[in-house]
Image (cartoon, rainbow, N blue to C red; front, side, top):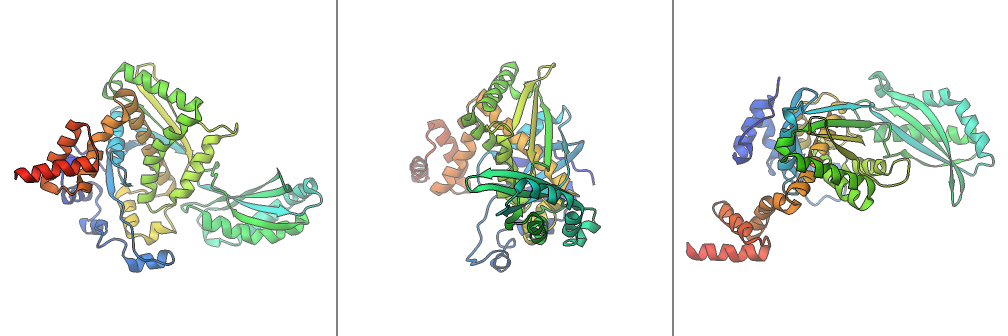
Length: 424
C-alpha cells in the first residue's frame, strides 16, 4: 500500500480523527490502534512479565510525524516523547525537504560486536597471534550457538584482537563481529561471547572476564541526507546562519552537546515508540560523536548548496531491531511498527535517522530564525495551562493569554484561569 504522509490540518483534528486518518493512510485497522488508549495498551499484567518488581506503568504521549518521504517512499512515523514541539518540529522540517526529494538514506548493515576481555597473560603479543590463528574455529563455535540466526543469513563474520594498555596492565580484548539480521543483537552476541570465552582463554593462556557486546556500534552506521528549501526556511540569511551554527557545533563541544541533544530528541522518540533500547542507541551515538580524534563534536553537518538551499547530513550508529525485546512484547510498539510498515531492521534504522536529521534542522532553524523559545512557546504554554487545571473549553484562551503576557509559568496560568472563571 502506498502511503501519503502529507496530511494538511492533521494537528487540528481530534485524537479519534487522527487515528482514522492513520488507518486510512497505512491500511492498519482502527481496532489495531486501540492499544494506544492507556486502558488498552500495556497493562500491569503484561508489564509484570517484562521487568521485575512491577507496581504500574508510565504513560508517554505517542504522536505521528507527518510529511516524511524517505528514499522515495512516504512514512507516517510514530514518536513517543513528553517534550512539546518535537513531533511538530520534525513534521515541519520534513515538509521543507519534501519537494526537493525528501530524505535519502544508506547503511552498512546490521553488524554488532561482542568484546571478550582476557587477563593474566604472560605474553599478550603472542597471545593475540595465537587467537588469530584460530579465527575460523572460533567463528564456527560462535555460529553453533545460534543456528536460527545463521539460517536467516546472519552469524559470526570475523574476529579482531586488540591489545589495550590499562592501569592494571595490558588486556587482550577480542572483538567478535556478528551479523544480527533483524535483531538489535544484544542477546545473540552476548550468547556467542559467553560460549567462545573459555576457548579464547585457553588459547591465550589467561582467564576471561567481561563477555558482552559493545554499544559503540561503529560497524552499524546509518546515514541520512536531505536538502531543505531556502524559502521555506526563511531565506538566505537563515540558511547562512544555520551553517554558522553548525560550524560552531563542529568546533565546540559545549555547543555540540546541545546540538546533538536536538538530534536525539527525534531519534529517541522514534526508537522508544518502536520498542527498541533508547539507552543503547544514545550510548552508540554519543560515543560516535567523540570519533577517532577523541574530541566530542556534532553528529550532523549543514552546508549551503549551489542553488542556495540548505543541505543537511547525519551519520550515526543505529542498533535497532524488529525481533525480540519490547518490540514484540509491548502492544503499543507492535502498533507503531505496523503504522510504519517497515520490513527490516535496516529500514527502521534509516527512518529513525531521517527523523533525527529533521528534528536537528528544526531546532537549528528555530535558533537561527527566531530563538528557540518563540517556536517552543505555544506548545509549552499548552502544557503549562493543562498543569494549572485548564479544561478543553478553557485551554485556548489561557494559552493565548500566557503568550501575550510573555509569562509562561504555572502560577501565572493559575491566575489567568481564576480570572477567566471569575468572569464566567
